[in-house]
Image (cartoon, rainbow, N blue to C red; front, side):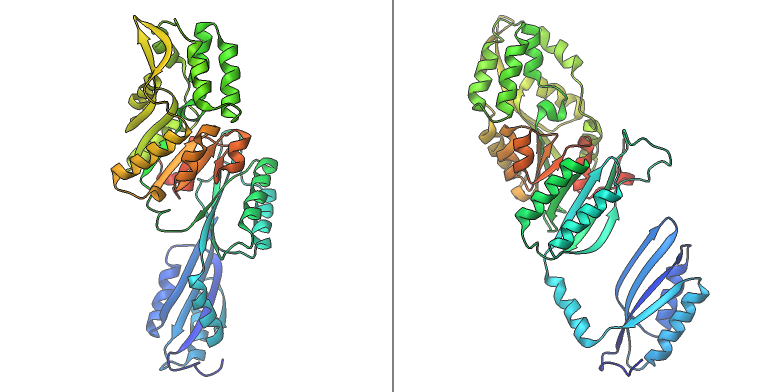
Amino acid sequence: MNTPLNSSGTVVLFRLTGEDRPGLTAGLSEHLMKFDCEVIDINQAVIHRSLLLGLLVRIPPHQDADAVVRKIRRRGKRLGLKCKSKEIGDEAYDAWVRRQGKARYILTLISRAITSAQFAAVSRVLADQGLNIDVITRLSGRPPRNSNHSLTRACVEFSIRGEPQDVVQLKSRLLDLSSSLNLDWAWQKDSAFRRNRRVVALDMDSTLLQAEVIDELGIEAGVGQQVAAVTEAAMRGEIDFDESLRRRVELLAGLSESVLPKIADRLELTEGAETLLKNLKRFGYRTAILSGGFTYFGEYLQKRLAVDHVHANKLEIVDGKLTGRVIGPIVNAERKAMLLEQLAANEGIDCEQTIAVGDGANDLPMLARAGLGIAFHAKPIVRTRAEHQVSNLGLDAVLYLLGVRDRDLIE
């Protein structure tokens, strides 16, 4: 090794690999301490008891840098580790420092199981965009040795440095992969807002619930097919939501209010709904249902899932029967977005600190206004326009987009 680079000492990168066991990092760092070395950067990972440790250290000018490097490498060998070292020159070090100002993003990949085909395709997309992967972290738990992947889930999080060459093309290619490889993804700027989101707003029908409640009401009223046809057209964005709601509710005129609890009892929650709400509450998030459905069912879910706020449409009932009208302003696409903004204002937070989850065209303004807008098992038009999506797993996959690990969850 040459003489020290300058009066600040010699910078050396050590790369150590070997079988992990307690005390390795302590043994190395105690040795560094003997020579007054400064630890500039450190990265350690363990995969199936295999240790990968990187140490960027500055050896002070009063030490013989060559001798220190030899002693550190010998120390690593005695600990059972392979050790490589590389001196970092002034120019390379300064370039490394300058890169810290580059933008950073988080790409989250979610699937029933992460395959090599998925991993290869996504990493190629990133490489083609000139992006550098700094860290890859597994958020999901360890899968069982024998599994058919039917109810398993897997999630890895990429920490990425740099700006995409074409962010529209990047997202388009990821969207194509989502369809062809059964893969969900989210692309988020790694900002302070991402780590400090406080309010989560969820659509109800086909999001928290597996059904469209108005279709169930239509079945009870004997007009199920007519109602379902209008519902589908509205969710695809083919009919104005206000008009579609009025048409469907008019078909319910004369239906007895006694069927409402009957329908509520048979409604099934979406996979992961209870896990999501239970953990959001535990982590201190405020939650809300913002729905184009009906208050009776929203309040039913509010009690069942401990949701903080409910905003939905109120059915007019006279003499125990539905009149075919709703009371008050319709909770449509624009009102959902406005209600989200109100929730943020009431909590004293920026809208960037909100999360919204929905599946239909009437959720798009709300998803766009939220700091993290997630299309959940959504209609094609919503998947194309939404920034983030979950289409292969349950609602609890939303927790991965917040950086939550499986080991942190309560079921």
